[in-house]
Length: 504
Ligand code: AMP
Image 1 (cartoon, helix red, strand yellow):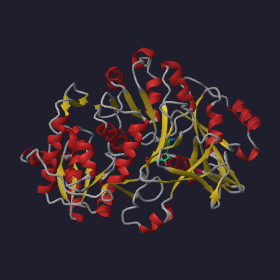
Image 2 (cartoon, protein in one colour):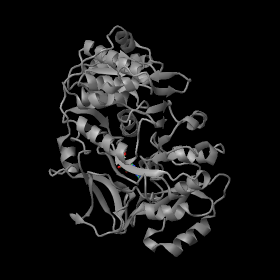
Image 3 (cartoon, helix red, strand yellow):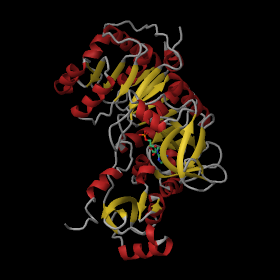
Image 4 (spheres, rainbow, N blue to C red):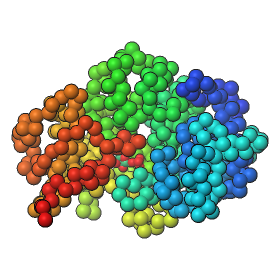
């Protein structure tokens, strides 16, 4: 019997007395206890009628049981379908309707609102709370810890992760055992993970970053995780001394920098800090190194492709870049049907064993983004330098076309971020009666600062062609971000939509 993902990540944990998870409450879970939980949960899924290929939708708080449920789905040959805990019942209804899972696992406190969703789409409701209680756990407690995994091929689906879908409906990215395993292996090797590593894991596990990049790499290499429910500076500062590595989104790093307890002493023993899921400002990279002596390693990936590029572990980690294509991943930068010259901007396309199988039940969307020869059109705009380092300059849909000229937000943002009194910025397109779209800048004032717009306009005028100048500015205290730290530009476009409209 083979089940590639189960055999590689979960089976080896069986019977091991070493610690696998360190929890925030000081409790530890051994690898063996975790494997037993995976087995019992697999039994519970089987008893609930879940079979190979069935989807198991999961909207639960991060917990060891939630991670074990991922293993259990893999063991029974089901397709794990984690959902953001922030989704409302209406949103969950869309996912359940689209994916038609056999069961929906959710917090028992949400049963009343989610039961009608289950009834409408023929799914069974099973409860799992953040404390590891609920009907799923009651059923699991009655199952044997030994579970013979269901046979699966590498090309079989292991998970469907819905894209965050800032425009239009979310799409379910279908990921096979081989997609996940190949990427975990490449990352573990490149980042030199081993059984001596203790990964500080404060990311959500409904997203590719926390679920696959962090958990899979750690499980694959026999390491331990400090498994925190979320990013709480108290818990993170307390956990850092026993960690060797941390994976985070850029906001983890900016929040740590805001904390005076982040010192060279606190993190001097750390082997590696990794950042991804949103752009890490070069300034944050530099500030972190100045404070701690640690150079953050930035990498780039997405739900559909797992990870695509990474800065090197040994070698030059370049601030503001996402590094080089991973071994086995082809990357090209395209504009008007051909590869752009070095240094020019185009849309990043990737191909390799990491690239997903298509969007669940959306053949048209799949055909739009995934070429028949395997190249996936990421929708990210980027450039590549002479050494092959890739820099992301934004999403293609965020490109501004003003009076027929292209403006890449990142170029303007970089300049604005460097101005006195500004901590960061977001440059967006707004409807404009004459130009079609106008460049608009949202500036975040640095703590206690009073930015001088006249000086900022002068700096922009000196450095950038006129068509790139923001036609107006807003100054705010913070940018809207999602849980993964991504700036929600669509929300900003909505907020400021009327700025340039002519009064009718
Ligand atoms: P998601 O599918 O939610 O993981 O989002 C993927 C998107 O996040 C990518 O297409 C990029 O736009 C963005 N992203 C991920 N990592 C980085 C990074 N290191 N720098 C800039 N953008 C990133």
